[in-house]
Image (cartoon, rainbow, N blue to C red; front, top):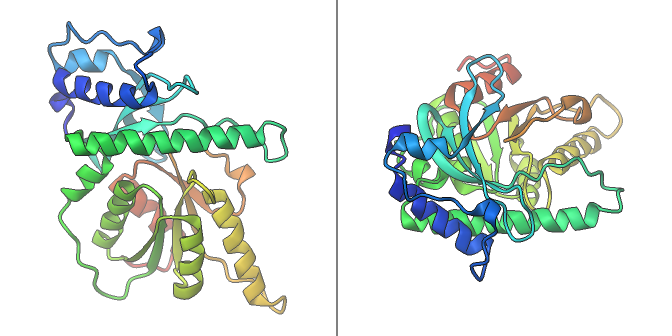
Length: 281
């Protein structure tokens, strides 16, 4: 959708569905109360949002607008309206905004993981309700893409993302660039397909329930080392972490780079081609 298509009626619908699920029972705190009575235009709607800077190496920053509403357990969850796939095309999403650097050995690790799982489940519930009500989520936007038939013998890319709409968008982009693509919606499925299909490159979501993208990368590197058997240098499959936030590669040295979510056509193709120097696509 275009920015000028974001109507007050669409915002009210998205807000109602969000708040019903984020605050069961209707006890919405003042911080999440939004007065929409005076809204008349898309400009009025966007004035309620904060524009966040999103990294875009080698290009203009992506437009990303957020409205912080929180939920009953966590105050920082947001509604996000952001560019997806192409410049000037936007989608609605729930940004869990829960990327605090808590280490696995910390006493708070278990509680934090429980909270993140709660947020991910809530995000899924809200976005499902939005989709059924016609709010343009990633899955709705991706369904409008022209199907791309896979052909040829281009490099094989494994796309790992638990969000179906975002995964479908990445698959469409890569196939349109001449790549063969296989998909996985979880870390465990990614490991299985890595072993059975031996992709030339992996694009994996950094934040997934259960096995995270970082866990997946670690398992892939272990598999490569085990397959080498200690007699030769392990094969190295390029891996790109896909993230909606910033990732310090110095702390995630097993990955070869990161790409920003939601996926953008030119940037994703550029990063994949950079990691596959022999690729002529």
